[in-house]
Image (cartoon, rainbow, N blue to C red; front, side, top):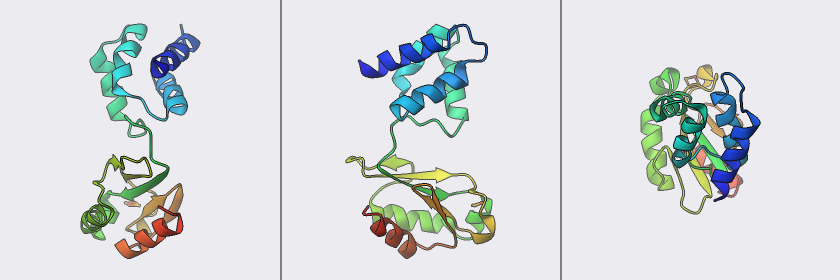
Length: 152
Ligand code: FES
């Protein structure tokens, strides 16, 4: 199928390149929007690595995703400064109002709700990033208003 064909192309393009695993994973994600877990054995075999090694790298870097993102992406910072400003409660409130657990994408692909670990905006915690745009000192109402503005 298509994902496998794309993966084979990417692998071929990096053949013989030392340390190719990360560039390969990035290329696959650029083209497919994700690094689907079912492709990992193919990548491991091609690079003569164990599946565990490839899996370890994919899960170590937070930038790789198992499924493509929704059309809108809401990232909510879960790191220390935001925690001290009540992001746990904010997370729970948004999960219930959006009907979407943190870390998941709506089935219709309209929205992904993702944790992120520091957006470099600690002085204005809690921080969110909606479709690449940073917003600080937010509460649930503001986040919902921002989403409504974007038609989510
Ligand atoms: Fe949330 Fe830095 S800890 S922006």
